[in-house]
Amino acid sequence: MAEYGEWNRKGGTLSDVTAKAEYGVSRDFIVKGIRAGRLEYREGAIWGNPYLRILRGQLEKYITEELGEKYLVKVKGQAELRKIKKEMVDLKKKLSSLQDRKTDLEELSGK
Image 1: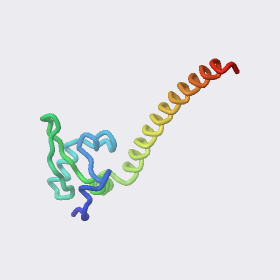
Image 2 (image 1 turned 135 degrees about the vertical axis):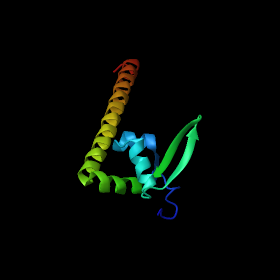
Image 3 (image 1 turned 60 degrees about the vertical axis):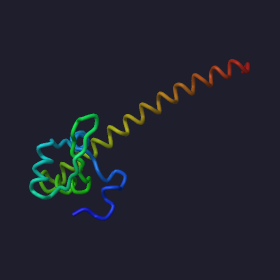
Image 4 (image 1 turned 45 degrees about the vertical axis):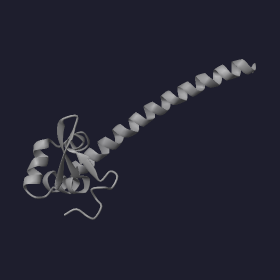
């Protein structure tokens, strides 16, 4: 079962919707794990929409058992790649705006 404080640890839990986005697993897959007793969960609702909150560590272990370690590594790699690409786009936008500001300041100072 869950370790002490695992429910409160930052990044230790995720919703079923986030699990679908990060790991590519369906809500049915998660419910199957809950019914099998392999996943602990808590129910929640945001703006009247219900969701399941599950422990990330247990989900990763369950995915490894059911779908294999290769699948988990592949999906985690894809998620990290998406995150890196997004950060690169954000940094390029910021660099562009800083270069524009630098040009404006140089023109004002007469260089």
